[in-house]
Length: 224
Image (cartoon, rainbow, N blue to C red; front, side, top):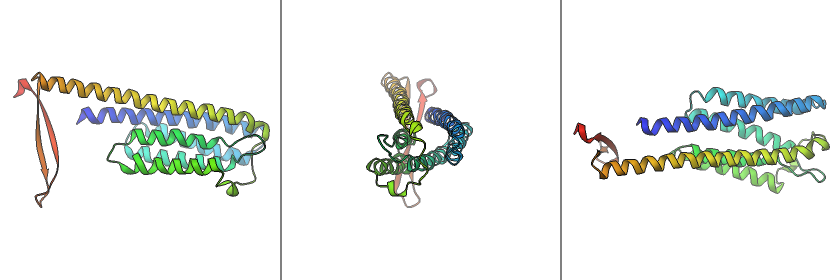
């Protein structure tokens, strides 16, 4: 069981640390920016983003599904709040909603296959919110507290670049994790073919007699 759980914990820890560093970095940068421009009402939202980042780093020590869910929902709420404020004006498009893409990808890749909410439902919610913001369907809800135009101009470039970099990192983590799993599967398959280990399957049966699954027991040939 350790062969499956330890890589899983490591992957969750990496994703949570990535989320923590990104949220704290962006949160502090934008908080300082809006304090400098005297837009204190906007800085509050990014203080919240910084708080989510601190939570992510703290929960990375546990590296479990509940920690991942808590942080993912925290990021989702803050990103949606920022995206509402980030309504397109003049020639500057909305850009904060782009962070929903790495959030969706990170959830889909990190949760286990049997965790349907994390692997399917939550990513679909993120994609739906992304589409809604991209189409301007939520623009009527935007509060009249848009950041200064000069800030929005280079902020859109920063948000686009950062969100795409985060998406690339998430894909890289997924690729590395998939490579490790494939190598482990090949090594186990080779060991079975060579008689180095033996695999025994024990059915899991309910009281009603229905077979619900099977447990695999792997033994080295020397212990047979």
